[in-house]
Image (tube, rainbow over all chains, first blue to last red; front, side):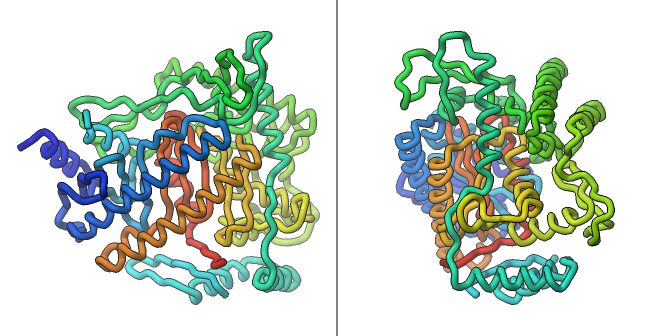
Length: 121
Length: 399
């Protein structure tokens, strides 16, 4: 088992984590771990991966535009994007995403988890 | 009427106009007096044919915040250095969470305060400028040790060290004194902003009370002798300030109907009744802006023709933020719809909001309320939780 796969397994074992997945620059799902009790499917995660890439790209463009137009700094580079759903949230960084339950969710910890997953990626 | 609502009852979920109607009727029921009910209904009716005008909801408050912030910066700036304004000086420091090996992740929720340095682009200054952290603005000065619910044992949150707490408390005492001075000078909003919604300790609470007492002009003190009944037992508490009388009636009304969207018509604020306007300012945006680590907060119209904000943003920046947030919200909604085409179970991901995590600050949006949160100082989990509690229903207005 590779180090990346091991990280996914460890991440899924964390309380509150429903799924962990990895995707490429095109938003294609490459690897995933799903809590089978959640009802999430691979096809959904595949779509979510596209969503992650799209939103992160939009946010990056907006961040650069914002900094250029306002002179303010600190927005770019965008580290991650999170979708807050009714019951679950999806947090994503460049190549990794994690689905967590909203109840008691710690978003800072979630983004830190994504950094940990990315490692030297 | 071009509106959609969502209601979540344990085990069941309802959508659409009936929910919108029921929720508004329920709110109407809590509003006393036929005249007020008619006024509200007429206001709703007027919303249909007329568009809302763009207006800043809290220009005075924002200006006060900015001025107080600048004063705190100027007091720390070495003589001879040029002054600046807005976020641009603040957002260079990049506090990052510490990852604890072995535990996979561990986040220090309250890292030591960093000293921000930066060079503003627009002014072309060559000197690095030191500036105070945004939390030193009196409006957000009160320390709320809002340790979020740890995301399970594996994601433990680490609180501030005792020495750090003491240091911060010392800063707060100084800021409370500043606010007292401002109160004496007639800055009434300082009272509201200084009232924490969760008294973190007794001493702090006493200091806050002293602020109100010394000010002697608390804007929401009880008004005996005025008619009307208060909702919820004769009084309403918002931002730690006890409201009675008419204001106690107005505030729940404003909160229910104008939050998450506070519409302001016309120029110069639009809400003519000073009481309603005052209470409107205490809506979710004001509360958000007063939370620790929140640089600015605002609301945008789903129709894209209005916004309001408070905090460390210039008006044009707030306008841009509102436009971007609205656009992203629409995009996310569209994506969720497409996700639903793949699997109906994806409704658990039906969007309530989204977060963009930038290098030094994050943008958090829930329904049509947005806020800028400084990473490290602010706690996203806490703010998201606050917004989820305060925005119980999604309200969408179709353009």
